Length: 184
Image 1 (tube, helix red, strand yellow):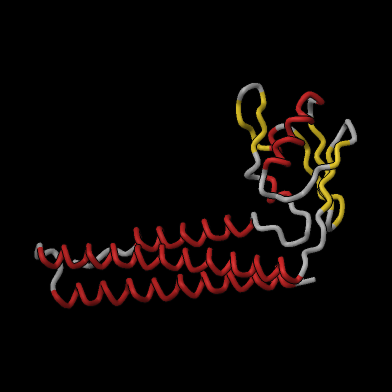
Image 2 (cartoon, rainbow, N blue to C red; image 1 turned 90 degrees about the vertical axis):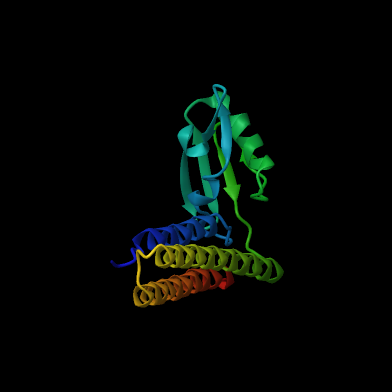
């Protein structure tokens, strides 16, 4: 019998996807609709994402325009943006909201790079935890005579190869985000 690593590989892929999703929410001095995805607005008693109650457009590299479908939601959108960790003061003209993203200072860019590195390290820890779980499972199967000693060693080797592959992928994702942050 052969040890099935597909479940563990799937978990590692999900770790990479979660890291990418987390990094997409980090502001890099450019306007991006992704930055608003986590902000919820109360809409008829239900927390709703901004793009669920308004049209969000990128006006230029540093400006987003939010036009609500109902004018009654405008103040709620403004309050939600102010309460968020976006760090931008919305400009409300009575019909729409503009968000102007300032250029990042060198100091802020370095802070963001540190934050990205920490998220990358957290993802690597998650991948190593998945490796540990897979190795424990293969040892358990060897103990229960489901796997032979050779099959168990082969399983550990293939799990280590997966770990190395996805750790390198974490490094690549982090490096891309670092370049994006340091770009002026």
